[in-house]
Length: 168
Image (tube, rainbow, N blue to C red; front, side, top):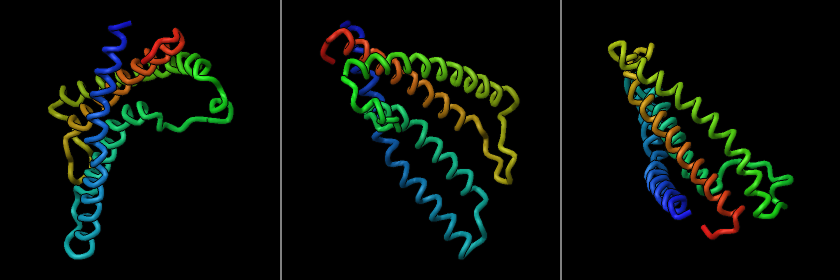
């Protein structure tokens, strides 16, 4: 159990740090969209702003997801769950974590395959006028999915420890 607790501390610490840094990405998105509005009003419209705002949003969302899971900030149906004991919540969360792990493994597998494809053909590019390379955002997505998988395993370990009656 000492290894599980060390894993929990390591993963939670890493995702907390990444989540707190990425949290400020909202200001990056605001800056990009502000520049988009200003350039459309006073200058020639910038062709890069829409796609760059989308890339910033994906980065914000996917790298902040594990931190959100750690803080318990994901949307949950509290109709029954809110009244359950901590032990029953841990039991139900253990079962649902297994489904989430399966989903994340398949998602990561597809993401890695897509990233490899982006590199194999001279760098896959977006079909828009700006034509940015897609590999940077695909690497960010795979990283975020991997971090979410690690955080899910951490939450699963916490639930198992709770079911055993141990302190976390």
